[in-house]
Amino acid sequence: MNVPTGATGSTGATGATGDTGPGTIFIPFATGDETSAPRTNATGAPTEIQIVGFGDRSNRIPLSGNGFTLPTGNGVQFAFAIPRQAIVQSIYFTSSNWAPFTPINGAAVTPFVVLATAPLGSQIFTILENTQTIASSSWTGTGSQLPAGTTLSGFRTNINVMIPAGMRVAICCAYQITGNPSVTEYFFYYSGGILLS
View 1 (spheres, rainbow, N blue to C red):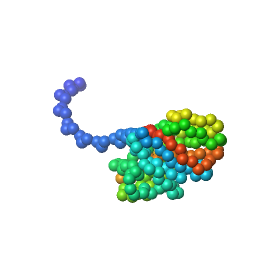
View 2: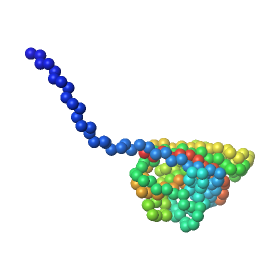
View 3: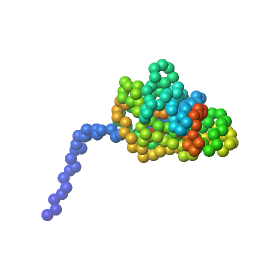
View 4: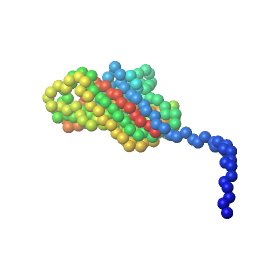
């Protein structure tokens, strides 16, 4: 026997709103009209970094082991705090030389960007080595002068480094020299972006 379908009932109450999804965060950075001039030692390893903001950069900050301590005073307070837990997904950057320069013969000068973190209220930062993003090519020493504005770039994806909520973050710029390393001080511009989720 066929029983007719009854009338449609009234719509039920709206359920509770679910949690907001994680979304993404994009952080731009640039030295602006200020060049960055970190230094290297005789092995070509960086001995100083500079923290970049958006349109400016810090004074030189000496490295100590796998980190650095922000000194007191002006010109160094360029770190910021992460208000919620985030995962670093990718970093893209561009670097160019401020003026013509001639790298030492046989040297490969390679800029990079790396993040460092410190607990909220602390000035002691630790470099997050797994975030280091190196240019895909180098300024090389061939005996010829490189013109101002010779541009390099690099990127790193699938970084997947977690930063807990409340941590301070510093975007650090530096370079390394291989092939024929030396103590140097070069002036470069840096700019780029960081994707967090």
